[in-house]
Amino acid sequence: DILLKNAYNVKKYCENFKLQEFKCGCGGKHCTGYPVVLDTQLLKNLQAVRKKFGVIAITSGMRCKKHNASLVGSSSTSRHLKGKAVDIKCIIANEESGRLSIMKFWKSLPKWRYTYCNINGSHKNMGNAVHIDVK
Image (cartoon, rainbow, N blue to C red; front, side, top):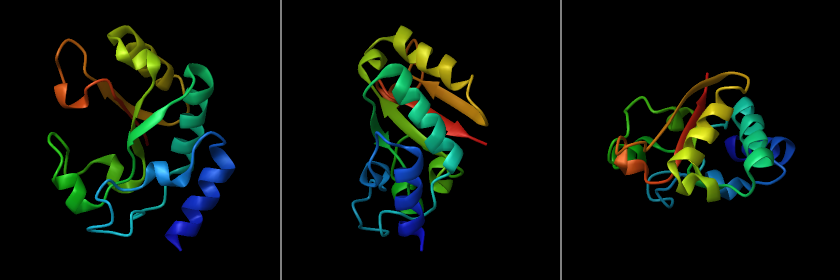
């Protein structure tokens, strides 16, 4: 069962996060809220980011196809659809230099694949959030 696997993995690998923080943003209109199993390396890396930068809010976790398609700028092959990506915010992400620091740290972690954010007006739809994903 997907929900049980996610609950177990979040509890095991993310001491500072709760399962509901990763829930699909459709609010249950299109899915159960937990359409896929979260990648364990994503969870481990996310916890490392939390330990380094402090309190983190997940602004977008896993997504169902309908919710993903409704988001401006989202890709039809988004890693959010596979449980391999999250968008996060924290205090330092309010400044470009802070977002760059998060991205630099993410690139030092195992199996990181990609990260981006709003720098110099690129990716304005991200606001102060940083996208992070794993292979």
